[in-house]
Length: 611
Image (tube, rainbow, N blue to C red):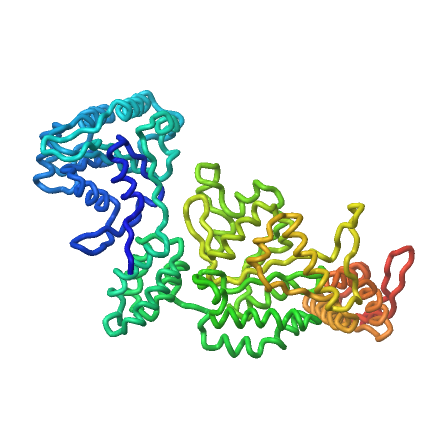
């Protein structure tokens, strides 16, 4: 497998002849593949840096950090003695604490040193100051001296010969802005090197080095090894090489062999070895699930069937199977669209119960609460440096806490478009990093979006009019709703890529039909009777004519679905029933009969008989 040297090391080598200082930031705490003894090996940044400098004839690398002060790398007698003599240091214990003023003197000595090539690495440079834009007098003096040195330094040839190169000062930072902004901007001799996360080829090369540590590697044939290494590299998209090494260590501790690479990666991502998606009972539970779901979500057979098809694909691990790295995507993505009150949210809850056996694995976000652009900080976490960035986001925190869950984004069209952009990364890569740098992985979640798009649309005059109505054929409802969703993402938001990521996972719900409405009504009426028995110890009785009147009142308008039926039942029966019961002495009573129902001046009254 091909190996490419890290770009930042190549850039460093190329620029040593024309740049005196380097600001190195980004993925600085990772491991890196560098050639040692003729083959690539994973080493920390300091070792990788020294190997590159040593190859250019450098004999001494000084390392400074605010805690331990100055030391020499590698900590060998020859290097230590050379550093002590050239820079007047006392490294008896391996390091020496120095002030910023003393460090300035060392830097001045370094840039003009001609006896031997030397370099200085300022580690944890992000912690040199409390605030980069509010320096103390000593800090300001130190950085001005460093800036002056960068401009006045000259490339040198040491006494032992070699090419004309600078003795560089290298600043190791978490973020470039951790240094005063003017420091690098005002000096053309300061180069900025940003270390990115490893690409697929680099991860594959690292996986090749780590694979022998997995149990079963020696027994596997070449084709099997190559395939599993490929899966290791694909499954760790966006991760560091240090994370790959940690996964290998985790696999060793959990006795996971080479064939269980996917499990090792998942365990590292979500912190759980147990995988509900691979439980033996799940397939049989889903196979028999249609009746269970339709008992809770009434009258939506087509939506239920399509949802189960997508769920079966998720259980079989086939989500994103057409893509190279599809196993990092969420297990399932569903876009529930249709009228209000027809069971979209209830179906999401039912899926949670079905897959995870516990509705508490259901995470809901009402997207109407995130209509403003600044609300993205609450959902996803504030950017680094902003107030509250260290708290993370509600979404990322929730998914880290419950990596196996159904995540519902209710009324997604009400969210601010900037927030919707973040869903691109979730849908494509299955991960999201918050302001404090913690990554939440969505690879074991089912994402459910709900929307009322397409039920009402704006006409040419900008007025909101009903696009589909109860009684319309399902095919017409589906066609108009899908068309409205497409228009919304393509033309109103100008973000067709979001719709492309959702794909054909749009599930359109139908209006509640009259026979379904009656079943919903009866179920709600049963709940009312149960509550009266539980709270008041009374048995509720309704004659057929009273029930028929109530049914007619509650199902007259089905445009609001089951929620509309419930609202009508509450105002037209539960409220007057409570009023009537409140006026009666219930002591010793066991049964309440609703003998009649009447309405006068839009006030509903009930006639009760208690026994």
